[in-house]
Image (cartoon, rainbow, N blue to C red; front, side, top):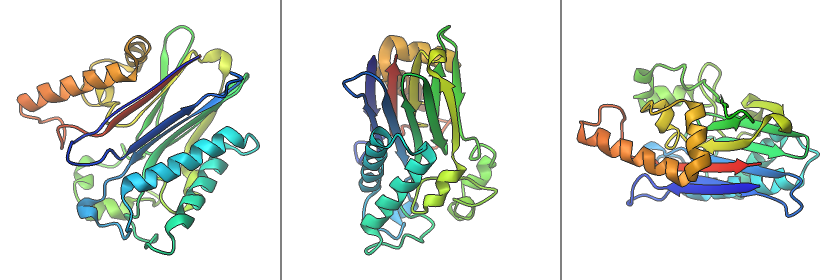
Length: 260
């Protein structure tokens, strides 16, 4: 089994708010993958005395420990428990009811000798590559359904955040775990897994450099670090051309790749 994790910050002036891990027991009988993309609040206004990296590190750590040790829980139950644990760490010092309280997208996968379970919440992506090399993207597309012009307004986005008709992220409410996209795939149908934050999935979703199957091939050959370097090259070229394709030149970009 092969596993690789790579990440690049979007800016040298700001800390990387992504978080990722792959846990592979020495027995080789299973494992787990966790990927978070922290949500940057406008002007740092989130009612919390902690940073987004503080939040993603604690939520990511809880998800990794629980998904590796609690086979009796579903991934939705694990996400719910991890959110509750993390919220308890700063409930006394922070306003967790604030609409912008620290939050993150989530990709979670767990496998054993029979199957791969997955969970996706918000706009990070999980790729499942089949033995024939084709790849299927598991996505939570609720954010995509919202017109881009609406999301340009912080106030309008706040009215849609973690609400019906809008989109959901992992914040302080454990019940959001019920909103995640979940599923199970027989292990025999999976050659490799990859999780990508939206800064990494730009290769497909923003720049159209290839489809998901081609993305999986790049990951198999070059690893997530190779994909991230490709994304950075496209972003730089786009900036030289006027930067019309995105709001910011670079975003935090993280990828996790596991091949069976």
